[in-house]
Length: 317
Image (cartoon, rainbow, N blue to C red; front, top):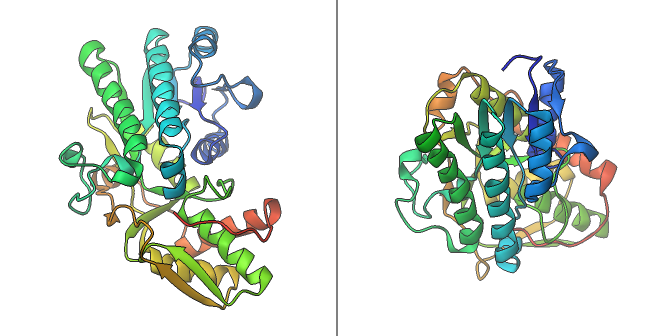
């Protein structure tokens, strides 16, 4: 992937897609196509087909598709599933039809079985039942992953899936019903501090463990995989900070400056007990995360203060 070749990031307005565009631009890629208003709707076959026919992108990152925390997955399972199925079924075939050299489809660590051994290895995919709270979304991501494998087998296409750790960073989605755990916690703690509340109640037990990766670091991992990963198997894009939700809540409270109590509601769902990726294949490519977790968390909060600061109450999923 040379800097003069055409590169398309489907989902350029998403957290990871925007980070990818930033890092590619920083690296001097001059052939970025489909940015901003020029990006086709990734679920519309007519728009995507016309775009690929005109631009013929040689390298494609698929970072499109709606996602959300536990609350969003409980309230909108059909919408999340359909959107992600449509993205995969629209962008991947168009990339093959119009000669894309290599495609990296971003799946999700939700695609692993609920009781997966840790760290999670790609050999464990489809080896057990999924986490019920995000099953619909996970099935859609598995379908995209398997569609890449199908194009490899049938056509020899160099299409591969990347499975990222939980990304976060500037540009994250802070909407109450849509956000993942870090933006939800930042907003919740900020609101409690502004309102002078002495207690913040959060969903679940606080015991589940999650791996978090700064979006710009994840973007660099995606670029490393695109440039240097040659295997057909999916690749885990991990290597970030692993924390319990309780420890994460305390770290967020410290960054925000919230001094009140944190209580967990065990009647609310926890989600998967643990999600930690085996990033051996990625480390072999020479990639390591560059941003310390607390520094990344503070940068995310500064972005929130500049764009969304308002004392709203949200649920943490």
